[in-house]
Amino acid sequence: MFDGVAELLCKHDPIGICFGDNPDEYEHEAGTILPRLRDCRTSDDALQVVYEEFVRWFDRDTAGPLEHYKEVASEVWKLWQQFGADPTKA
Image (cartoon, rainbow, N blue to C red; front, side, top):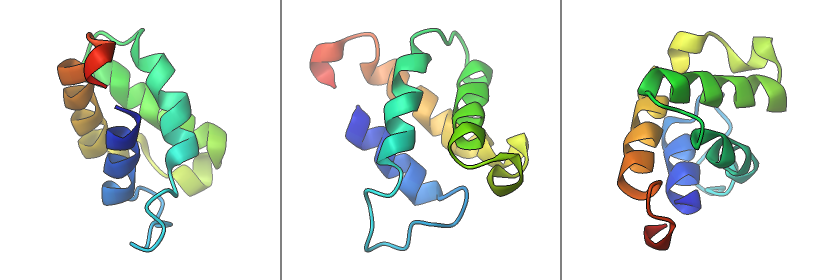
């Protein structure tokens, strides 16, 4: 699960820092997003979590607008739905 979230963040690269040779660039963010997904009930909740964590790690100006995170948050939510309920799959 952790690797999947980190890969999604790098794939979408919301702040433009993942250049292919640094696939671990978003591991810290993935590590703080994952525990918070337990409290999410919808993809909109996951969007809020992903955005808040990027604002926390970087700042609001660097993170950019909430809408910029919709696609990656949707994919993170789908991954969570597949694996989040059963930690043995993660």
